[in-house]
Image (cartoon, helix red, strand yellow):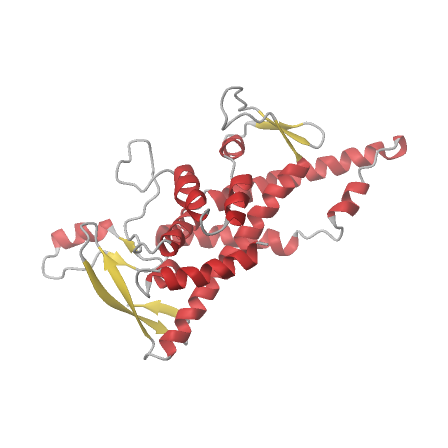
Amino acid sequence: MIRPEINRLLDIALKNQSHTGDLLLFYINGFHHEEILTWNSRHQERILNPHVIGPGDEGFSEYAHYSFINEYRTRCISKLNYSEYLKLHEWTQKRSDEIQKLVYIEATTIQLEMLIYLKFWEADMIIKRLYQFIRALNGEYYDWYFRVSKSNRDKGSTGTRQDIIRKEIRDKIKPYSGILYQIIKDTYKTQVRDSIAHSNYFFQGRHIRLNNYIKEDPHADKKVLSFDDWIDMFHNTLALFDEYIRMNNLINDHYAKIASEHNNIIEILITEKDGKQYPLNVRHDPERKRWIW
């Protein structure tokens, strides 16, 4: 269900993007490096462009999280389907101890899955790329100045993680895909995220008790999350992660092919905060499979 939507939306984004190189910037991570401004103020003889490409801190962070998540998704695969697994929980007095052991193992596994859940929904690079993808869908120029808020006092940021996910990604994808809108809405729950991040939960049978329940708060009105509900949330998260990786690869392959037909050069567009725009070229190195100025 997710893959066909991603394929369809990628086709739309490639057509709608304001500049033909905007989605390449999505892949090679264009950003405004403020520390270069400090360098420029001290080295007037060699002024550098603060608009750069490459992984940056958020990219190196993503590499670490990818290694962890990939280890899970390639090695922690059950030989049973879910229906077969549930049959193991059909209670009899004789199997009581065995079932308790199964629940313990499942709860322990869920705590590992909770970490993966946070690694996806809290990752700056994933949030940034999804945000930039929505901008391409809407025909908006690539945002070189995107930045996730670091604190409540951070006034120059794009927004908090939860605001960007809910308002800039989930809500803005709705006109293009009701399916992905609903998947994100059902999967990214700020109450669940906060409960996990602050270790504010406990297990009761095959249920997760959320200790941050607030009766009158529509964003924190869930007392209990069943293991079955968690499985749906985690499955969606992992499926979105898989498609996120695949979309990155598709975009890279798309531009690498175009570059091979144009002396390995692709034009990208710099859009400054004041609206000033100018093009620059990036070069594809087919041997090392990388993009450079």
